[in-house]
Image 1: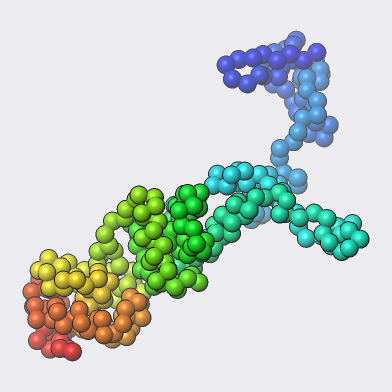
Image 2 (image 1 turned 60 degrees about the horizontal axis):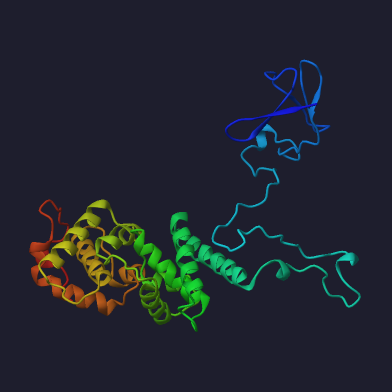
Length: 316
């Protein structure tokens, strides 16, 4: 008869006559056999391997091991639910034509609402190329707000969009309200309202956004070289230090700085091109540009190579 030796952790199955022998597992019969005496130490052992073989040229594809999806700690049941596919045979329906087996009976309404919100968050994040850590932080924020029930009357989509905006700012990669609104079905005003309510409900805060948070992304989307990006960053920072743009949003200041730097270089961009990328109107760029234009000579970095002199820049 097999014996088990209980150590510090889990019991160990071993042969009573040859405790040091390495047991051989018979996968076909599900037995563990002692190689020294042939004693069947354990039977009905469950094979946790793949149901079929994975060949060398298929290793890069999906693993055929059927072990289920990873647990989701954000759901109350740990997501250990059974998802029943749509029936196709006659045995799947009763005499009235209704499906006998439904997923609604295995998942609570709160888990179902959170699962739909998580899918919406993942879809929005994928559309603007956000990494997984931001998705996870957004899911956590949404779960906290949803469980507190502090935003009653607000749609889950609006809460999810505002949570994504907060997560981006907390992770140091802020996005504008218009960028979140572009991938969401919620208006900019509603996202802004939920943003303020979530900060108040969770008693949290976010860092103030600066012009440098958007500069590299805007310049990259515009196809501007590194020299123009560095000059625009320098111009925006100097304009803020000299208090030339009081009351202006960092996005409009960044757009005006990019316009000034591009007009002084060989890679000139129009106000409309910059406005489409930054999500600001042409008139907003012009208003910020007019504030910094009188001090343009003091705003450029010393090593900037001008293609258009400062006195030839457009005055608007």
